Structure formats: C-alpha cells, structure tokens
Image (tube, rainbow, N blue to C red):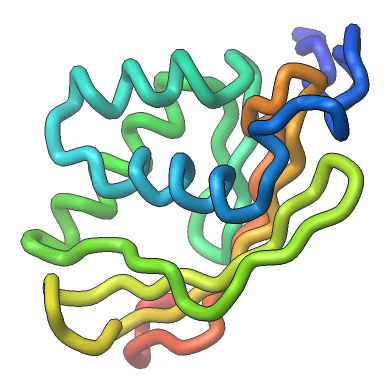
Length: 141
C-alpha cells in the first residue's frame, strides 16, 4: 500500500511558519512524549504530527498516529514516573530540527539521553523522526 510522503506534501514554505523554531518544535515534541493521558497524547499527535508521520530509532520503526501513540504509551509504561527533558540547545535548518533529550525520574539526572532529528512538513508538523540513543542502560538498545 502506498502512503503519501509527508516530506513532499508541501503547499507552503516551512521556513515562513513560526512552528519551525527549534525551541518550539522541541517543546511540543517532548510534550507529546510526556503526555500521560492517552486522550491528550492523541490530541497532540493530531495537532502537531502529520497523519502518516514516521518514527525510527534503534528499537522501533512505526508510521502514523496510532502506531506512534502506541509506542509512546509503551515507553511510558516501561519507565513509569519518568519524564522527557531537554538537554542542551536545539538547532535546525530548512525543515529539520535536531536536539538532545533526557529521560529519567522527575527532578533527577536522566537515565537515558538521546538525540532526535525531526523533519517537518509544509505546515510545520512532525513528518519524520530519526532517533538515536546516546546514553542508555545496558540492554536497552
């Protein structure tokens, strides 16, 4: 089955859209991962992610809101009480944003640190995510 390619589904210039600001993109992205309530998470996906968005990291490769919602829920179940926090400063160019994040107990140092490269569609929504684990407990990746 063929899927529309969200990277080429462009009707406007993404650089004219304020949602391509790296700090804003990172904050909205991490808010999706931190949404404990499934209804809130699905609303964030509907608002900020292309319907056919893809997410790929060393442990997962999924496409679409339902699959991404399931992945985020599974990660939240695997790490109860943990939160995603920004690490360092994000940067970006064109329709790409790169940043590091940490995952750990709220108020503590992160147990996991990763880097994500997010590709935005023409409306500034997440179209593709390429995730990497920079620091993780043995056996996680």
